[in-house]
Length: 287
Image: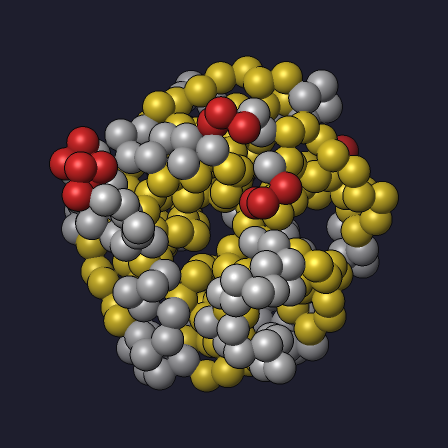
């Protein structure tokens, strides 16, 4: 565990090549890079919020920041690849992931209480061309792909459900949205998500203090990992054999008593649930 005291820890991404875990503290505008071999962590600060970071296939990083997707090489300042929802200044980017074709999928969240469903969901091509897939989104969060079944899973947190699309890997088209399963109201809200090698989904529970495992074909809950932090934001498999489940958490909005009860809220946790994950995709950036 890393006692990072992150205000809004999010977006874990395992980089197998460097054996590092990337994750972010969104509201404090920090990128955190945990080295699995040395146990050390490097922290980079930015001038705008950052919600996800993904290595590119040509070196450097793709960064989901509050107003768009940026590319960053080494310590250089990020360069804007594409702005997203510039006409909605009270929206910001949230979770982002790449499929194994190297497309970047990213959604937004509204910070405007008067327009709670003004977010969207987008896909960004390697040249920066961006097209909108969904509108009317409350808080775009978890994504996962089951390539063997041609399925993509998606979470819009306020709906308290995990949806599934038919997914065409070659074209990136999604269709036929429907509910895979719903999260019980007593266990918080679904946030980030990952998938294991058996096609089962692992869902982080915001306000539920846990990560749960589900069979998306049957809607059956298969397991639960308790986390010593109530605001569990996301999870991903990592480690040399992809058997380590890294879990990010937050402490934003917690009261003094809650912080006393959960002193490690905002930390990065690791569990070994006995399952193997899948390697995440990297962004297929242009040379």
